[in-house]
Length: 76
Image (tube, rainbow, N blue to C red; front, top):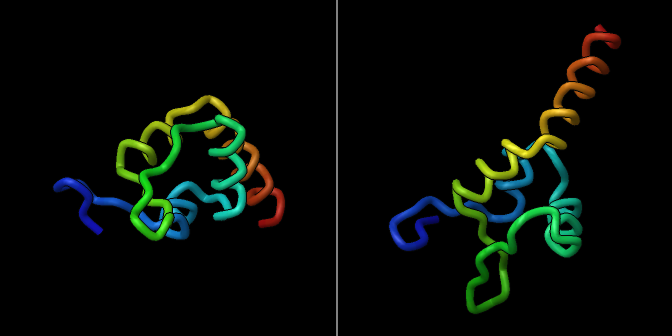
């Protein structure tokens, strides 16, 4: 989807990009872990590339990714 000329992700797409569940994305937004999503007339959430990039660059995201990689390696 394009929002003001920018790519916008539905919540499921944004969650997939971030490697988390859509539910965690909703909870994280509610708790203030990241900026609120854009909303359309129906109330659906849309996240811009900026939302995704900001979330990728948070220190907690890097720690989670490191843990995920160690778990994957230990299962291989």
